[in-house]
Length: 347
Image 1 (cartoon, rainbow, N blue to C red):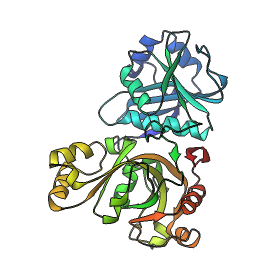
Image 2 (cartoon, rainbow, N blue to C red; image 1 turned 45 degrees about the vertical axis):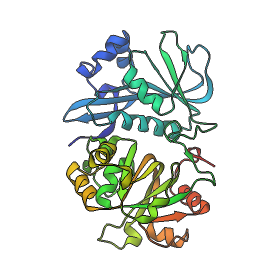
Image 3 (cartoon, rainbow, N blue to C red; image 1 turned 120 degrees about the horizontal axis):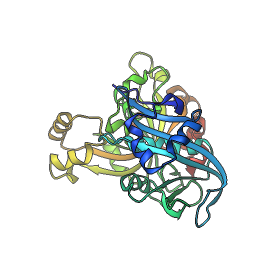
């Protein structure tokens, strides 16, 4: 079991931890910087006492120091230090998401990091999510910038976490059982749930999520459609009070069973992003003639959960709570009530 993610001061970390060796090697003044910035907050992941991930960030304004050509913006989110000990759990994606969450919360216009070309694995990860190599700094590091304003690329990864909510995009409510919900959507964990249910595993850390169901209505779903994730009732209290909307996701693809010629191709498609074990997926594949596999990206968690009773009373939503279509106005009103940052939603 991991301690998952937490915020600590740099001075609470041990500079002699081998985790920092590569940073010391690449940046001769790293130890001095680390000591001077001891009161700066860092996001960390610690598993069994071992530091596996670190994000140090700061807000800037006006321009990026030393950039050639110059890069200017009003509010700039700098990923000052980003390091992951890769161990096959998609932890890097989890930290990318948190970086962009923090940039959005701080109303940044752009987000950037600097890196040397040899850090190719790290750079491929950031480039997947819309960071572009646009300049060099005075240390000959490449400056990778993500624009959090302006036009969308109409790609769920390059645009991430921003959402194209135009009238041409369909919006749906999608039900997820409680036993799966919070492990799939870790930032959407309920206040009465323990963070100890979260582990450092691929299906929790990954920005991409796989949802599998037999509901025939799901067959209409298309790429770029939007889901509001609905955590179904807990079976103890009435759904009116215990079932809640918690998150918003964008669809990458929706596939039918017959698009997978055999179990191996199905499992390879699902395994890194599905909460289910290989044995469960194999039984599901063999026992069902038809089902749907939805691949989606986890854009944002609601800061205020919307209960079933409010969906009915305030937003006029009634029907089958496993899957239902929403109007544009219902979607926008729920998003606003849920406290999702307005600059995430592009109309």
